Image 1 (tube, rainbow, N blue to C red):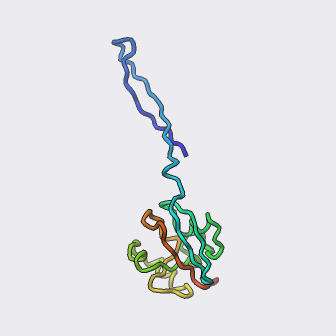
Image 2 (image 1 turned 135 degrees about the vertical axis):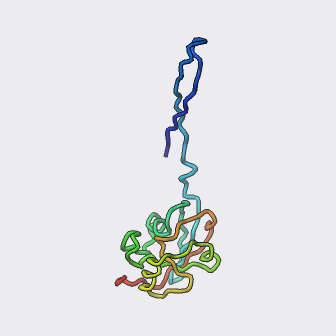
Image 3 (image 1 turned 60 degrees about the horizontal axis):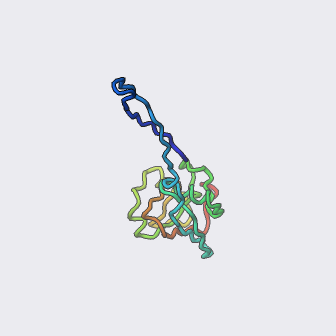
Length: 144
C-alpha cells in the first residue's frame, strides 16, 4: 500500500561543495486502493447483494472478493467458460468496451443469454459504475 519514491534533492553542503543528497519520501497509495464503488448484484430469485468494488477489478473479481456464490467463475477468468455470465442494463452495457470474438464464443455456451449479456471476467469496474445493478442469470451451464 505504500510506495517509496526517490526524489533527488540537490543541496549545497558547506557552501561550495555542491554535494547531492537523495531524500526519500513515502507516499500513501491507500486512496487509490479503496473499495469505494458500490455495485448491486441481483440474483434470479430477486435477492439483492451489495458489493464493494474498486476501479480496475473485473466483475468476476468483485464477486469473488465479496463471496457472491451465485457466480462460479470456473475458469478463474481465463475466458475458457461462461460461468461468470452477467446481464447488464442497456445504458451500462452501451458504455462497455466491445466484446471480442473469444468472449462471443464463450457467451454462445451460456444459458439465458440476452442482448446485454457479458462475461464478468471481461468487464472492468469503472467509477461510472458506482450504484449500478447487475442481473445474475437463473443458471449457468456446467458444460461451458
